[in-house]
Length: 39
Image (cartoon, rainbow, N blue to C red):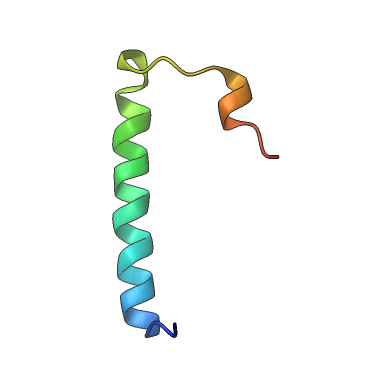
């Protein structure tokens, strides 16, 4: 499916915001370094 660039940018912005929020709450999370290493 083709996504308009503006929608794609908006989706990326939302994902980035959520990701940063998760990083800020990292102490509440329990994940190992292996979970965040690239495959």
